[in-house]
Image (cartoon, rainbow, N blue to C red; front, side):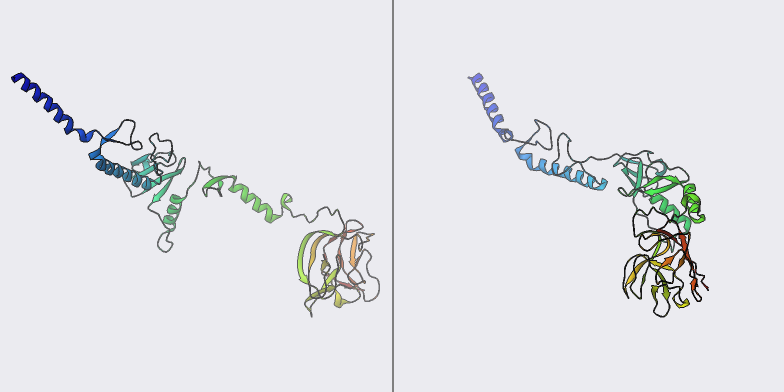
Length: 329
């Protein structure tokens, strides 16, 4: 009888034990935040969720601090999506890694500076933002600030010109040197043979030109190839006429047909081809006694004005380079 009571007590104890843990028979499975077969009892679900969200918030805050986060609304177990946390380095400012990788961050322990790598191999100071104040900073201080703020890529060679990459906004090393630039400027201003301005272009068709041009109002009807003088009274350009000094000298050639009061494109100096109006038979070309015309024959009558206006290159092509000197017969 005593033994039966003992067995009965054991059985009852086992039953009570089963019922006492029945609250843990329903489990909540976390498939996002954990691996397979990770379970939390029902009573602890709220606490576990709160702890998980706390970790999420810490991760978000850290991601925002570094400018990127592994979380993109769905935290992946396998880490195949989202961003990543770069290497966080710290130490004295002068000991920054020489070749950082993109998204690396460096906290300087001997200053308040924080650096971040946006382009492989280059640090950019992201804190504090330094501004130049020309009313306070010395030239040396301004130079130091600007040098510190410049983002460049690659190693620079002394004497090379710096260029800005339009796509990235980063300063890069150009192919030209300061010597190349100085040489080009010198040639441009000394009219060296390899940078001289050439007025001549092959004039392959009628009514074409090449050279220095101007746009001015005309005081009467003009056409392509007409020689013009400046009328001081009307402040307009009109047809030059070698018959009288008042209608000379011819200093422009019309390059289009215009009427009184209209602005006209004019040749100041250069080449012009006119198959209809130019019929040259000699090299020197003069203002004509026919209004607006030019001729390879100089005027010969008493009182006529003699002005050379250029050199004939062919029967219908004139190099227009008018003289301001006029002689009277």
